[in-house]
Image 1 (cartoon, rainbow, N blue to C red):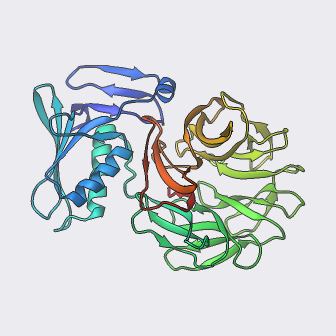
Image 2: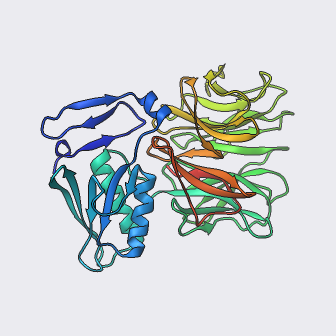
Image 3: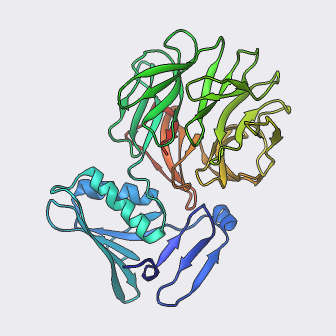
Length: 397
C-alpha cells in the first residue's frame, strides 16, 4: 500500500502541514503557527483483539503521538490484532461506509512483547502521519529516593525498565545524551565538587571530563557529538564554555559578571542558545561557538525569566521554561525569534527526536513527576511509573 492511498494527517513541526487526500481528493495546507496557537484534534483510532497488556502499551504510545483511542465504532482508523500469542495487526482506514486495509503486520518473534507493541505503534505513526515514531526511545533523568538522595536514571520513554546508572549517593544533575551513542554526560558531586562526567552505558566506564575549580555543570553535546558546551565558574562567575567532548581545547564564550546557564546546540552546530542575566534579567541569547558573536533571541508574548532552553532536532523551534506570575510554564518559540506559545505548566523541557513531543517535569501536591506533551494537540500524559521525585529529563536522539 503506497502513501498516496493513505488518508494522512501530517502534523510535523518540521515544515508545512497537509491533509493528503485519497484518489484525487486534493490537499489543504494548514497554517502551522495557527495550529500551535489553537491546538489540533487527535485522530480517533480503535484497538481490537489485543491482550490488556499490549493494549495498554499501544494506548500510551499512540495517544502520546497524536491519536486518541476510542470505543468501537467511533474511530476513523482501526488497529485490529489477532493470531494468538504472536502480535499481528491490520490497520484499517474507514472512509464513510467503506473500509480500506492500509497494511498487514506480523511481529518478528513468536510471542508478543512490549518492544513489539512499541514497534507496532511506531509503524502506525510512520505509515499514517509520515512521521518518525518515538516509542522505542529512552530518557535520562534525575530521581531521588525516599531519603531524598538523587541518582541519574535511564528508562524507556514510557517509564519502564528504569535503571539507575549512578550509585554515588551524592548530588547529581543535568543529564545529557551524546547523539546516536549509548553515552550520557552529567554533573556529580561524587568527588567533592560539581564535576562533569561522561558515562558509557555499554561498559559502565566513567570519565571526568571537566573538573575545574568551582562550578562544572549544564553540559550539552553538539549534534555531531564532538564538542560540548557547559557552564564553568573557573573565571569568577558562571560563564559559557565549549570544549571537545573529552574536555580538551577549552574555549570561553561569555565574559560577564552575571550568571549564564542551560546551553543547547542548534542541530547544525553553528549556534548555541543559552540563558544569561547580563541584560538585566534572565533571557535567551544565541552565540556562534566559533566567532563568539552573541545576540539576544527576541521573544514576544512572554515576559519574566526565560531558561532551560532545548532546540528541536529539526532546527525550527526552541522550547524553554518561562516564569509567568508565580508559575513555571513550558513555551516554544521559532528558533529565529518571534511569538512564543505557552503550552503547559512545568519545567525542564526536552524535545523528542520527532520534534513534536516534549518530556518535562511538573509539580503536583509538592511532588515532581515527568510528563509527555504533544505540542500540536496540547495533550499531556503523565509517565506514571516515574513519579514523585523525578526531574531534569533528557530525551535520547
